[in-house]
Length: 285
Ligand code: HBI
Ligand code: FE
Image (cartoon, rainbow, N blue to C red; front, side):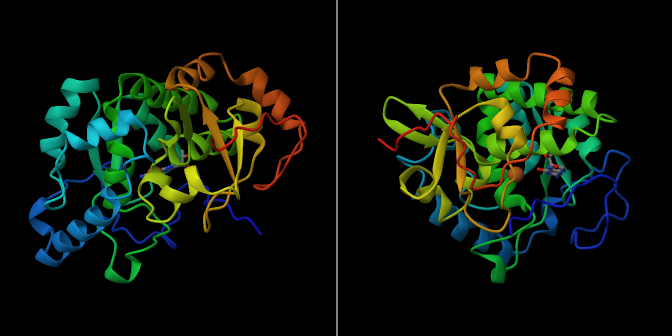
């Protein structure tokens, strides 16, 4: 049974572990790097050391280049340090949040080139897997891609699209677009398939599975197909969508989505493992 990430319309405190008391109206807080313990910095170093070894040959070049320039293996990064570099690169800023924030708040931040980064780090027992994004997922997975100008433009366009969608009950369709690109997207390169999705790049297992395993279905990116497709939050993806370049993502978000939402409203949803005949499959090699 594929479950989708709980909708964040009207944040339900239940099940969200962050401390939301005292958040600003936009759900941001101070990162306060002094609150991290030596154990947490050590856990960050071990998470980083394990993951960095799996990046070559699996992450896209844009990600590898940016991560290499960030050199944050020594401990949990200070967002204000990163923001000086990020502002120069693409004008984006990281803002600290206690965890998932309501969709509209999230869209508002993205539309203004602010990326919400959870400030807390997972517990030792969650070393291999965590459901809710922590600072390792958000930083190691998402932040390097914000240094790519075209991808950074797509992220802002996505946020703007989300703000327009409110009231059109389109949020589930937008959530799938985010999930199958920003979190689990693949890109075709002359050297072969590579990942740009943060959920893949921050996962010790999926970073290999997504671009090496023959099991999943890899489909050429198609906006309608993506928006119709449910997803799994508790297992490796059964379907990945492949772009030829980040410009393709940016172009996909250019038109007004309203007519598309009317089409989607009468099209049946597709399961995470659906295999519709019209799919254009992308081979592994
Ligand atoms: N909040 N902090 C945070 N991080 C996310 O990735 C996030 C969120 N709220 C909503 C959300 N993602 C998804 O519903 C997006 O599809 C909008
Ligand atoms: Fe994420």
